[in-house]
Length: 264
Length: 193
Image 1 (cartoon, rainbow over the protein chains, first blue to last red):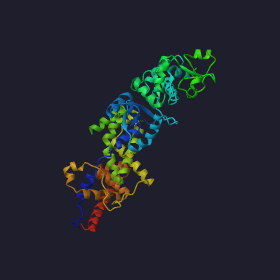
Image 2 (cartoon, rainbow over the protein chains, first blue to last red):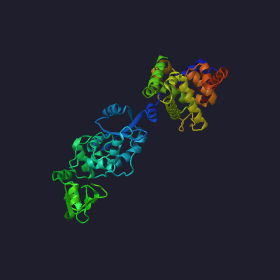
Image 3 (cartoon, helix red, strand yellow):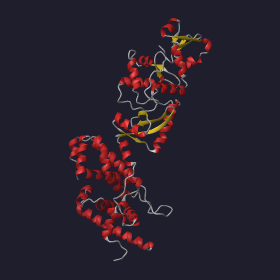
Image 4 (cartoon, rainbow over the protein chains, first blue to last red):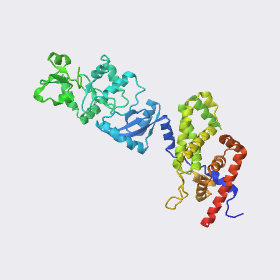
């Protein structure tokens, strides 16, 4: 026998030792994601600071503003009963531009959202909020009326307060009927004001109008009245602009509601 | 195996909650099995991933009594074997060169053998040559040798897994092991060690 040939025992021993190999750290997370037992997340820089955006196969589940990732993952697990695992770099890089464009208001195509755990009413409220263009605001009562539940203004406020996907579903563009900015789920009125400022909705003007009890702008050339942030209201020059404190006042003056922003 | 029985009971009670523990418990074995069959860390990760996803699809459908009755180890290896065979049939496995294009040996994935004295005594070089030689064996021998000597199944268990007579399995293991010895010896002569 050749002296260089390894002994059968050495062969078996070496084979046995081939079992000691560590699986890659990416294996468990990808299995949990592919089975739908865990969701993915990425951190995203926004005008209100770092937020964490989470999603699963159905769509985006949450946007949370947290100081650090540990707080986020703990809160996410508590709220959704599923783990959130950091997305791999490829996925993160593929998704980030779409999220950033949505936050900047440059993306028209809607993102997929996973709202299936919410009630039909809550879903309707959030989908309606998605229709409010960047740089504009609508009152809670507008959403209630638009979704066919004009009496449910408080419930609309509650649904928006519990919006799991703020920023991407722009609940910050919904304000009190008198034009006051109102509360904001992701950090209070100051954050809401800052966001609207960034978007060009001129929150200080809105607050001034609220103090003056102005709810609508009209044009004396078209006899149409709008919400002050409607793009049609913005086109009216100062000399042709008239202001109204209520729908009744506008209608009594012979004005009809704008067909784009639908103030009544 | 106490832990395995506990896992089965936990899975039967609540598959969604216990599945992560099952993956944690088995991922090292399933990955090593796939790595030794394919020689490629990337293929091995994909096979292991596929194995657990298929396992979940079954578990999430099964009634508790069916989960309680399963033999988890044999079942998982069965799935992994099927995934491996399907990939071979589709020829989607990358061919593993014994050396990388620049002539250096293919690097082994991270492992914890350094923490084990009996393994550390063995040269990393022999280990690497063995892994490469193993991948070059014909598939039927490779599967039998890996199941017997890497994963430690009995001949009877392997016969059941592969649905082959025990004698056939033994023959494949013996022939495979002999070929490994010869191949390793030839290599030594060639490189003049």
